[in-house]
Image (cartoon, rainbow over all chains, first blue to last red; front, side):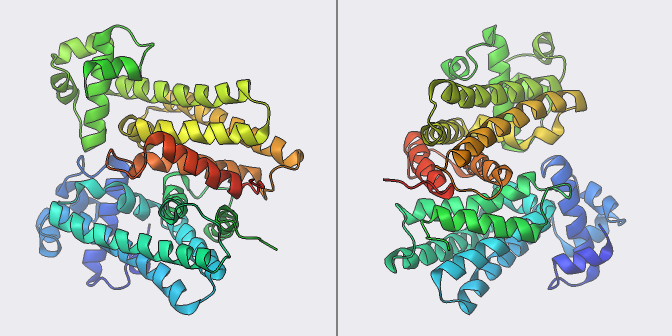
Length: 204
Length: 204
């Protein structure tokens, strides 16, 4: 990973030193897990002293929270932006799955930390992230419910369907690597076809 | 978790002390991750001395391998047993998804270790487990391919479809808890309906 990657991952985070620490955090947490990683490991992976880390993040938990919060905000914004620019439920689901899946493939290392280290967050920070997660699920559930009411989707329980749609995307971060058969974009397209069928859409 | 749970989880493992250590390993790895857990932590969670642990498992990695191997063997056997007793592709997928999903819900703590600590396995042990994983995926892919050839499934790439089917099951272990809306069995049934639709089956 290069320096420019950190700017690409977290365009809103300043200064660059904070982004560099987040990147070192992602790599360390993904490799050995949150609990086995020390702030010293992270600082040293970022080429800094532990004291320099504390200037930006008061604790290891604060660094995990930053990574987790930005990751959830990015996926929420991706989902909300599709809903804002499309009105047709089928197109909404298609684009939403394409983008959500592609994000989890392209950003698989970040996504693994975002998705699998939640329980390491302190209570208050966990609650903030849980709220973002509930919002993401709610948006997807509403699109499915609207589509079902409009007669373009056939689903039993929209809760279960929304959970399954997001599950498919989340799990991509577990298995995806640069050696995967498809590019993130292509995988997103294939998964959106599968999801539309799963929701009972008659595909042309 | 109780003592009888360890016998339920690993009926083929003897003696009971080994099972007790595996259970303590599962709980410790699930709570803090593999790398942050010491053999001393595990032994003490099992009410034993570290020396007593080494009688059964020469290393922490050997314990993880035992947990991982049994978990994969159980899910492979579950998948193979459905294929052995059913011939209809639709019924095969229905039962296979029901059982695979229910296992990941009912055994969610074990399944988390089995699914998310793979990269902590030493190379040789990893290869053994990877072979079991490839076999599971192959069985599912073959059922899908046969169904597609018989005209009861409509799928683009059977690789992608098999991956997605298993992904839905695996990800259940990430989010499922005793507070979930459905029992493992009910969730398995709902997911099998979603999967059959995803594979383009005309459901009555």
